[in-house]
Image (cartoon, rainbow, N blue to C red; front, side, top):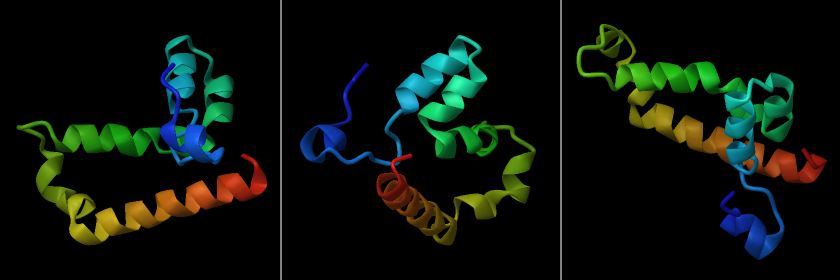
Length: 93
């Protein structure tokens, strides 16, 4: 596994720390273990799948859900990721 540069430099967990182990656990069918590696990212899997569908060229969802790709939405995602990074380091998640 590739080490996280932020964790390596500071000892703090970034919002994506554990994501490689989470994906590996998912590929092996270990859903509970995957959740424990990064609960935030695990809970976002349905939304990540939705975003992938939005990028398909002939996606019928693209016109209906284009607000999910707006600048305001991207700012919201950034704020949520930063909050998760702070919360996971405070509470040791």
